[in-house]
Image (cartoon, rainbow, N blue to C red; front, side):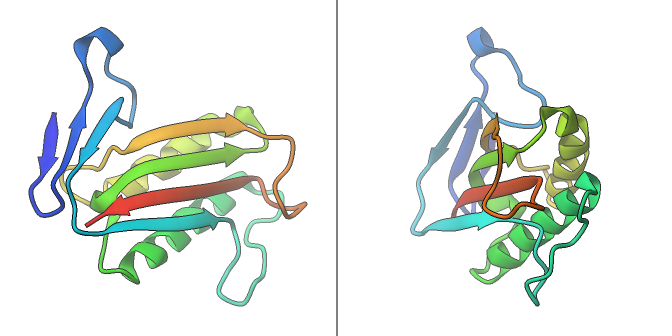
Length: 138
């Protein structure tokens, strides 16, 4: 169990559920603010797709966009309590995890929000391979 005192976030992995790789089974939040971040895709600030046909580049852009959205509300990766991740090909899971781990390692201790990850047949743009929506608490 880890606690982020500033945001009042408790991350728990009950022994009966095991310890998952890179996320938490349960996240309890007592916060003054809850921030909902819409699905982030691999678009740059000008609306151009970054990394067409390159999942690693898209994942980096998505996490970069997530960081910008968090910073706009005075938050960091440490404030994330829930992610919903959509991949168009589960074969990219290992590459997603590498990008995720780099992103969460930007804070100490590394953040580990609750996560739902699903494969979908397509996202709203034909070139998108990943989309992440998030909830943060501050």
